[in-house]
Length: 479
Image (cartoon, rainbow, N blue to C red; front, side):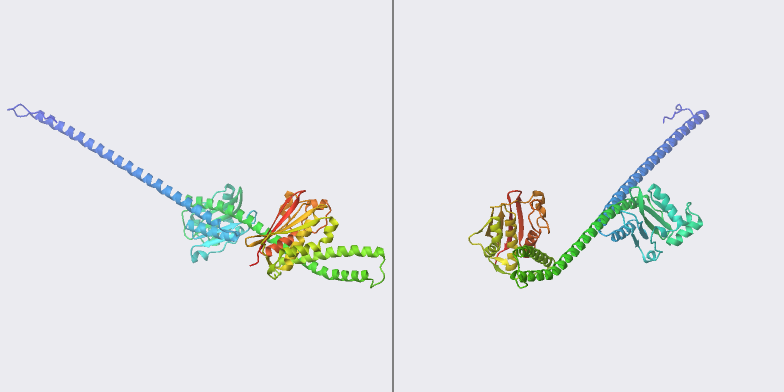
């Protein structure tokens, strides 16, 4: 600021002084305005900075809350997938949701509709909340509350009442009815839906007025979806388990029936055999040639029926674990030779030869002689029966470490590839055997499988249609 100095030696005039004062005042006013403008600019910058920081903190908090909420939802969903029972699953859902949103009480109510089951779950944070009136089902809720829930269900949206006594949607009487029925001042509900169909509700309670947040409702909605998915999976598992239990029950009933019938057949068969022997010997009178031929046919069929009954009784005993093995060293070569001798009439009739080959150093098997003889007899009988005329069956006995290996190979009709996975099933007969009208009951390999398993061994079948079948049995060797 330049101040005009009066000429040296002359006193300033009043006019000059007034102009100078005015000039000074103008300068001061401009300085004051600049200072005020600077202060306002600083305040605005500070305010903007504060708002920015506050927005950043809010965004950060929202992000953290969202991450925590998503993590919690995933954790709850994983916990739901651990349950394999509908009632237990709903109970866990009620507890998980109630704890997650810090509700005083949580009820999960499901209606009676597939694919879910009509169940309910309830959880309470405190004894006071546990003492609240019990909500058994949706129909137990007061009418004003059901009206709110049904209205929200049409939109598949959540509904909440922060304070029943101060909600514009409720009259005083309706608020009183809800408060009396629930015993709480505030509640929120999320529909549990399968597609567009509502099958239940999650009902959250607060003893005192509470402002339910959108984040809470969003998490409950996600949990409701996970609950439905888990319920469908659990229900499918339960139905499968029920089907398996039913099949097991039917299988036990079938085994009991077969065992009972087999036992009952034993007595009349023994009587028939006895009388046939008396008739054949002439004890009951002279027998003509034609009658004798008829008696021979009856005897052959009685023998077949008797063998069938014995096989059924043996399998029933294995099923009931009533077979007690007399374990001892068993020479499989000797067993096979006895079976070959027993089958000589059949071999001669079919013109089938049986060769037995024993590898040097083959050890005895560790097993029950009678059971292993029955196993070998079934294998040789099948091989001879399904061989072509003039065919050949080879039986090999060898050792393989701590096992004895019995191989029965024929060059017969074989088994179609698509049927080989059922060869050990009871009463199974291949389509080739049925077409060729080859007699049999379909119990031979089933019995071989049962005896082998009881001896802690294994049995496998390899077959080529039209070229033959090879059955390999591995049994523990004698110690």
